[in-house]
Image 1 (spheres, rainbow, N blue to C red):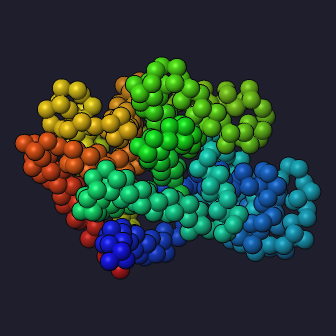
Image 2 (image 1 turned 90 degrees about the vertical axis):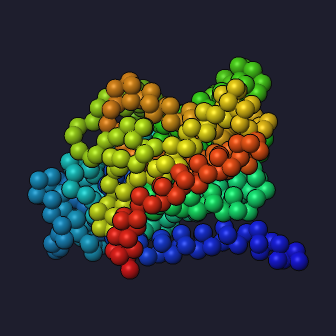
Image 3 (image 1 turned 90 degrees about the horizontal axis):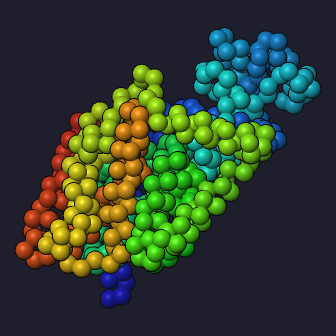
Length: 448
């Protein structure tokens, strides 16, 4: 009986994980080079490996030389020559062949997979974003090799962990296997989660550590939640919204001093992964100057390019960012469900509406809608400050919170409101899945 009970409790999660794993296995062969902004993050990670003297471990994946000419490999011809940028990539070389360029201080030597054709890419360190996520890529490239699937292994692992956490938190909230199953399926069907969870971008890292922060706070591990919120902002600057939400919760739960302590602890955690970059850029002064320059850059519109959107567009699924065309990877999110989740977050937080619609909630449970709403409003603040070229894949930061808010609202709704709360949540999820049918069909066709 105990085994049957355990099987019944965890079988839905196991099925979701199997489906997600099959999806990963099926799609990766179709993404056999750089996808979307991997060109920046992976290149920066490779440059870091070479800058700290570990490039020799990537020699079997090739070598890039710049400027070329005059820097060339003796007795070999480049597989790729970047005429506009005076770079050359060789697929099979030995140290003996490289002796002349390794001894030449004017030559830039970068071991590893070939680079995208971008200006100054062999010296680029992606200082406009924090470095924790790229350090994961560095570790994966050193352990598993410098190839596309290796870059993405940390993202895929964290995405699987997000599915597990969402199921577990939903089960803790509701005690209902059906609700927990619905939450994990809703996350799996979130187009942004599927999109970002399989490639080497930073948003999966900030999304994972945001969810982990909620889990820690929900389970009353307040110090741990401050640490994980620091890891969120160490992955990407919008993780600061996660820190502010946690500080607000601590201020509400205890007092303002504890809110400041929460921020201070998160800041210390944020700094630690940046220390290698402080050294590489020549010291703290240069690093701080770069940080302030890019923080200003984040409040300005980007040049024309990918389809931009605003936080309202994300809730209804328009102007979605395209990460890949074949197979189609569109960061559409789960429109409809997002809209309902934001509405429920407002209702759960506002005292008058909460008292009318929901039974009593603890501050730990309220951490879920507080976190979702803080992040969404945080992006509105960035938009108002001047960065009107936001992209829909930013929703990866709160994608996992959406099904949790829906489960919280459904399980805590008062009897008179319960049927309507459940109907709206299910309608939102159903709409979000239904508008993806054409994209899902094209995706299945492409990888079949």
